[in-house]
Image 1 (cartoon, one colour):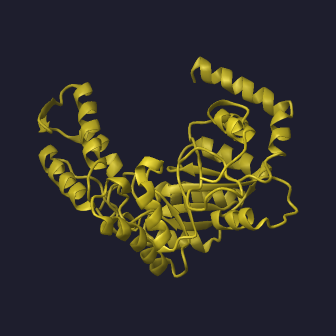
Image 2: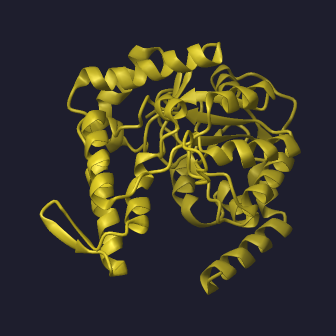
Length: 343
């Protein structure tokens, strides 16, 4: 831990044990914090969930949103919070579910049906994996030749691969490129279906999703069919398909309505007005972004904000940041001071 992080931890501890965090937390009952995690492994998540289970009302996303928008009266005076996990990584099943059971708190997972069905490696991890595992000495991509005996060149290649898949104007274009670069680097990306695969950064299966849901502690939302950057898609029909079909498949596989959606990557520039329009047309009731704010009854239900869930963060720092007393959410304090407006 760096000197700066140690200092932040000391400050957070002082805020917590002085009672200032508890005082600030008591004023958050009419706001809704939605945390945005992806992976679930690591000891800090356990400590974070233990803290949240004691001091917040941890709710399923749909339950929390119904309460927020209907002004439903509650007797529990702790502020509400929601824990969401994007993409449906395997450790959501092996780690997050175990912690949800231990602390008896719900979580919401946004699945990508194409990956859940196929078991393929997520595209945004491909560049790093391929650059690390290739044995070839050099490769040319985009007119540049990378000498892969050098660590810096491998890192540059990983970035170049990531940029190309991220900017693809269709899922087919992205998948064609990934197939080609695997052949050139003589590396195959892992898949759940491949015997002996132990790579943890893979998606859960439908059977695992249904098992999670049967506990009553895990709810699911849609996250497109194949996780494209919606604003990059050149065909409006493909954009609508990605959103609408993800809902249809989830409802078919899980056997009940799915009303929540998470925009891939999630900032305004990643989905745009066309993305919001597609979500509305698909019939979703609510959609979450990765815009880092808190939600109020005035928040647009299709542009809900989420704060980042950080697996490297000690629970004391999380406690202070959630009430706006430390670090990155100081901008939220400024927003609240000047009043929340609908997005």
